[in-house]
Image (cartoon, rainbow, N blue to C red):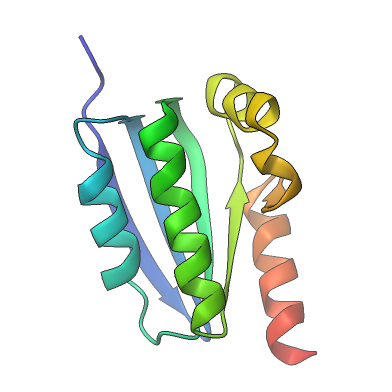
Length: 120
């Protein structure tokens, strides 16, 4: 049985941190894409996705992340992924997507990079 997808966010100055837990797949990718767009406090916010609790992601989930990435760039922000687990990390590696997104080992590293971008 698939793990239920849960989403939560918090706002920091210029940064929206979104935690994604469970499984991201064809059954819920539209919910995630909508949530990622709606949860930013300002359109130009930096977005950090905390994926430490994301156990599984398929290609439709990856498409939702790429859509958010494009939306962020178009609004003057940037998407950063943090704490990827083995299965989602493998999907990004075999598709080559990791080379086009900002991927960080920890949420703290992603936050630091986002705050540097804001102040810099």
